Length: 89
Picture 1 (tube, rainbow, N blue to C red):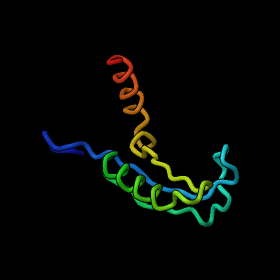
Picture 2 (spheres, rainbow, N blue to C red; picture 1 turned 60 degrees about the horizontal axis):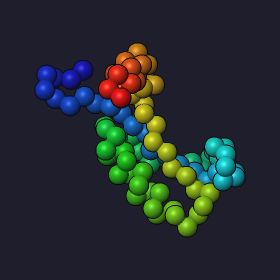
Picture 3 (cartoon, rainbow, N blue to C red; picture 1 turned 30 degrees about the vertical axis):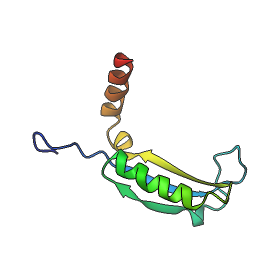
Picture 4 (cartoon, one colour; picture 1 turned 180 degrees about the vertical axis):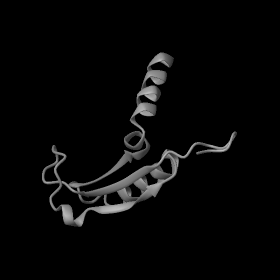
């Protein structure tokens, strides 16, 4: 719940790992996934993602991702968000 005028908390997970091949989304070793953290908004998650991605740029198989956890936790609002975005386009 948020107080009126306060930014809504939109949780994002940043994680990564080494992929089996460059054109797949399958990780080489699930036990060695790097869980970077959970962030309260997209901007801070993107900053963490960018830092990790740049730090591992020498390993072409290493990939980091941002998961919009708030969409998983509240699918109805994710659908509304998508509809609103489509209406603005």
